[in-house]
Image (cartoon, rainbow, N blue to C red; front, side, top):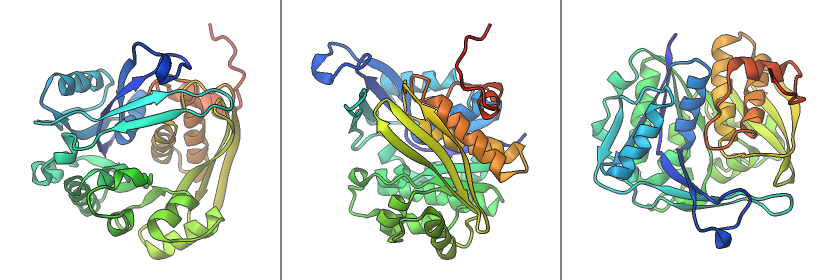
Amino acid sequence: MSKTVTFGEIMMRLSAPGRQRFAQVSSLGITYGGGEANVSVALAQLGMPAAHVTVFPDNDLGKAAAAFFQKTGIDTTNFQYIPGRLGLYFLETGESIRPSRIIYDRYDSAFARLEPTAFNWENILNGAQWFHWTGITPAVSAPAAQACGDAIRTARRLGLTVSADVNYRRVLWQYGKKAGDIMPALVEGCDVIVCTTGDAADIFGIQSADFQDMARQMMQRFPNLKKVIATRRDTLSASHNRLTGICYDGAEYTESQTFDLNPIVDRIGGGDAFMAGFIYGTMHYNDTARALAFATAASALKHMVEGDFNLVTVAEVEQVMGGEVSGRLMR
C-alpha cells in the first residue's frame, strides 16, 4: 500500500484545563500538533502508511516534540533539526455561548527558517501515492513557501495525487507577500482541495455565496483540480455544531449526512480528520459519495477526542457511517 506524505510545521499546544479561562489557570496541558501532521497521524490510526516532513529546533523542546510523534506510527525519517525555536499555540476551550480562543506564538520558528534545498523531494516522495499540504505552510515564511512549491512540482512529476487545505490565516502572512501572491501557483499543482467560499474570496478573489458555483470557478481557473471539498458547519454554540461534508467534482455535487455534535469535546483538528478521511476513502472506495461519507464521519468523531489527533479506527468510522451514533457503551 502506497504512503501519504505531508509537509508542515509542528507546534506545542498549551491548553487551559477543562473549560477554564487563561486568567484562571496555574498550569497548562502540553501536547503537539500541526494541520498537516494531524493528517498523517489520522491516516496511521486508520492503518495507512504515512510520513511527515518538518523542521524542529535542535534543542530539548524540538526533541520532545519529535519523540511525541515517533509514538504515533508515522514515518519520521524526514524530521530535520536546526537552531531556532519551537512554535507554540495556546488554547482556551469555550462552552455554550462563550467561544474557544487560540493564541499563536510561532513567529521566526525553526520551521520558518528552514533551508529549501535541504529537502530531497525525489527521495522523500519515492514510492508515495499522495502528497498533502495546507495554506498555513506557505504563509509562515518565504523559505517554507519555496519548499512547499518544490514538493508540489516534484509530486506532480512523479505522478502523485496532490491535495491541499487552502486554510486562509490572514495573521500569518507577515513576510511581505499576500496569500493571493503565492497560493495560486501552488494550487495549480493540486488535484483535490479543501476550500470554502470565504477562502476562495479571500485568497483567489472568486466571489460566490454558492459552494458549487465557487468550485466550478476554481476548476475553470485551475484545470488540474478534480475535486473541491469542504465541510459545512452550523455553529449553534461553542459546544454544539452540525457538520456536513460537501464535494463538487466538475460534474456532480455531493453532500454527506449531517452529524449533530453535542457536546463537543475538542474541535481542533476536525478539518485535518476530514482530509485524512477523504484520502482514506478515495484510496479504498471507488465512490466519491462513500469517500465523502467516510471523511465526514471521521471528522465528526474527532470532535469527541481530546488533542489534535483523530485517534479512531476504520471500524469506528464505518460504524458511525452506518448510522450508529448513539454512543452506547461498547463491551
